Image 1: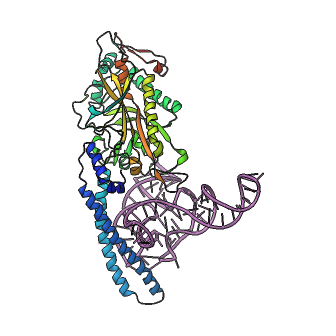
Image 2: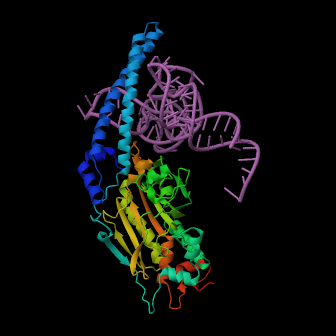
Image 3: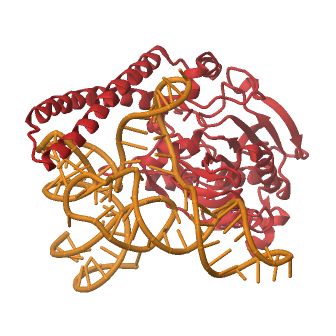
Length: 426
RNA sequence: GGAGGAGUGACUGAGUGGCCGAAAGUGGCGGUCUUGAAAACCGUUGUCCUUCACGGGACCGUGGGUUCGAAUCCUACCUCCUCCGCCA
């Protein structure tokens, strides 16, 4: 959420930011409601002041045994008037609140202006793409041939877009989770957490998924609960409503969780394989920082995510998302895209964002500076470190061998109990 | 699921209709004293809205109600705790 005062005072800038994102939001209703609100507020406050003053007088009169009946009559009317105005006020306030919650964050000046992913800015390419002397296969073919992925039976159990890992496949997925967590915890200084996989509406408002993107979520019928679309939601809400100490910042947390997404509107896209699933595993990184350090911390977060790919010897590139492609809550986002030989494409495997105050304002997360008594909003950052299912897919495709087997990257071998190759398992 | 109890400022905790934005203590900050530190003592210490400002207003878990007036009374809800039942 943006500061409503900032929106009021910088309307052209905010309108332009929204336009650059490719959304179309009408600000006239807001301006009117905002004006109306201040008008009503001035009026009710005057009346309240009057009531407070006269009520004191009534108390005094009653104490000294004087008659206060006419004042009481007057105040009865004043109270009714206040009640009526309050009703108007709360409806205007509701309009403003809803509007404020539906406004996206303002992109950082460094973010390229553009319409869609074609205008993202390439930052770098790392690692050597593997060369193959044989006809390469997609990860789903490899996985099914080896008997470690079974989409047919997964569909029987749940439906399309659900994974069923078997045998070494299940172990590899688990190995990846442990491998990623261990690096972030022991080498990058993140605190391990294991949050709820189901959250309430408030948490989703805090991170920005609600109220605008409800159709992307799985909601529990009969409950005000949702399955998390990313562990960013529970993790960025850990300190909701709290005032943190400056000395405790930055707070860096990591967690593995499954993620659940309805993928509404993505019919026909990535229908095969592990790329786009209703349920997938992810190791997530979340930071709470001071405003002056947040961009430095964003670069560090990106580097932390890149480390995983480097250790796995997977080639990747980093892009800065343009204004048309960046997420609702972010001011700036780097995407890491891993090389997928089977698709002859780079595919997103991590998204690292700075949300600045946007989520902190929604979730009311502040910190107190040593030299200032007024608490300030923290900056929140999040990034995948990494999407596990897509990493699994990238390993199958990049490490496939002529005989259909898959070489396990050296760094994962200890996590696989010494296994170096995945061979056909019937 | 049944029966009780509780939610007040960073924390502990007083406050049962007007004198309460709220006692006291702890913690924090500033100071006195001290070579330095501790102790002691003195002072200070919530958030938000509105206004150019002076000022005004709101906030005692949340919403609704009673009242001229609510932290205080009524009501619904939320959260936490204790006991019983069930349960991985």
